[in-house]
Image (cartoon, rainbow, N blue to C red; front, top):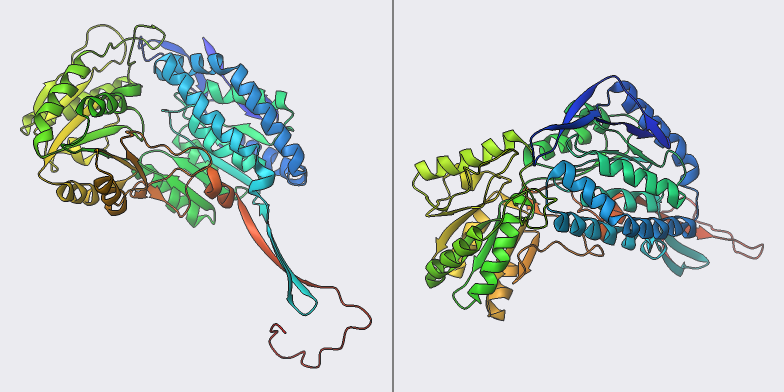
Length: 493
């Protein structure tokens, strides 16, 4: 049985409290993970604070070189990281490799930190006076991340924070702890000094102690909306800079002029990939006008063709959900929707065998007052709603409290342009079902999908992990005339 320790100040660190780990494909225990309590939280923050004094003074060139080295190590260890993800999360290996690749792209962005941190300079703004600005790191930054992307979501945070000159304490989900420790070892191999990147395992008690710790300057969070709201309020009340990304209910609108086979293929992958355990998963398809019946027929055919099994099996298209509780929650939503009048077109509730498996579920005739529509199920459930027009579909999306991601499938540029301007959603795909921005843009939603003013990674990530200084300078010479109006407010001349 494995025992996953903390990584603090460049070395594994033990503890007195632990929680069991499970293999979602079998349901059997696979090890244990230590849970950080006050002593471990204090130790991790103290190590990061000590390291900040020297790391913040390291040149941009050296920081970039470490990011280049980390990028190469992530590529060399891609399969190893993918296997750790699959063992603890359950997603199929190809999906796990894709997660590592998308996370590595953020490290590639961080390799360009000298360019991203360039300031501004204005010569001679007044007689003999110049003005310029630059950005400096904040200090110790904390990240609290969910189980569904053990590698990618943390890599949205700590490479940018560290490249900007901060130090970092990561609290991964206690369900998927191993990949974060391997990345700590890769950072060390890349040349990152001890204490700059720390991993603190734990539960909600650990997270609450970390996000309110007086030694932490900024908190990044990804998770459900209720917890994101709590993190934003608690960390903000403690004086932290906070970005907290919450849940989602992502809609894909299909117009009658769309390529319905393409739309069905793409929506199926977006709804059922990773067993629907993605904050960008499509969980609602909105069929407009006559697109409804032929779209549902195609979606049903594709859902029935999905092979559900262990993530390590090359024949599997979809793995298990993360836990028995998650399985029961997902099937409970389907049952409740059926009782409320929805038609279960494809039913994946009763899969045989061990493990936490739920098959693809496709529901027609759902309504917006059903819990299956109102709540984030976070499982392989796709609801189909019908709208008479594009405007009705847009109104449906805008009435939803979430605003993370959405998509439209159409052959009309005019319809796509109207859609992308009218929906109240942060990330939009046009014939693209999972519009996760590339690393040189930023990721984030609207409404109840984001608490705080900035998105993660990309340019907004750099701004979040730094603060600006503006300098106005004069270098007088012996011949500079004396200022005869010292008590007046300074103006340019």
